[in-house]
Image (cartoon, rainbow, N blue to C red):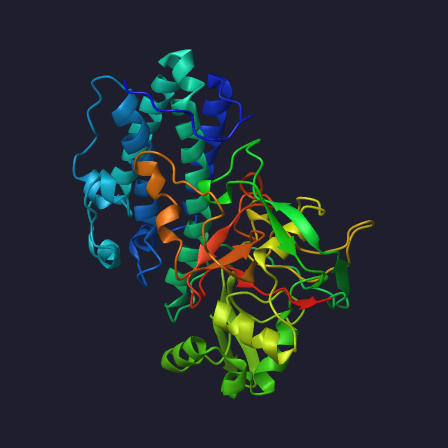
Length: 432
């Protein structure tokens, strides 16, 4: 067994019982998300960014096999050598990858074989956690298991968003689950919350798990600013549409205007107008758009254009994090089982901002860049985040598909500015 330094997060339990419980819980949640699917649903890949459910199930399993079992189980033999090619996503140092746009074109391994693969890896992981020397469990192996659990949680959210997109292209409007989405009261009036400027500490303090892109902790100057008390609602974005927002070139970034015209955007993703009313595809079927719900499935370009139309702007990620540190870590997250954003309800007593966590990821105006002094992790896992720090924008706060144990104020999500299939919404900001 080779050993490398422990990953740079502390205070995370690495005793075998806790590690195995967290591992089992993550594996169960992933399979529970897939439980409503028909066999045919596992195979669909409706666009390059939305992988088939079967691939997600195999990829998160490959992660544990490749970075833990192969390295730290003496004499380990892979379940299937070709799986390293089929289920590798983008880790070039771990070997070549099957062409991403073609993940939905292959019928083998079957869904049953992928579940069998998961079962075999689970058995090997149980043996490793039980028998590995304590110094390895307290060091790199334990840290890699924690990383693998959080990696699987990321793919739980991607499973939800990819399933939604893959089903949406079907004119039958398949229902993923029959869940009654509550009708919502009118959103609370939007308020502006003032925050003082100055030097603020940004980034994770290394107590508890965090991804490498949340380090190192550092100081950043933030000018005094105002932050909207809640995200934008569907009704508010409908005003933008009706006012010709998609036709006003003065509101759009050049690349956004070009993309919008090339893609034919006239409304958020999944919206369709029938008999003068907006409908949209949801995980619970094809439903009327609830005007009181929070807006989601808009790109950075749309978020930025909407902010300009309101004579406001998007917050920086430093502003967002500074404000979020003062808010309770609660919201409409994966555990609610709705997989759908709710509305702009009134804040709880003593709470300045609503919906900071859950419901929708909130676009910021910050490009996804390394923090000062950032260093990628050693080895193949160093490819996890660092190499994507270009041509992407930061989102904050989690969504209705993010596990509660996975989100925190310092979490930095990132996507290209034209991405719309995630649960991405808008919170406005302004200079004080």
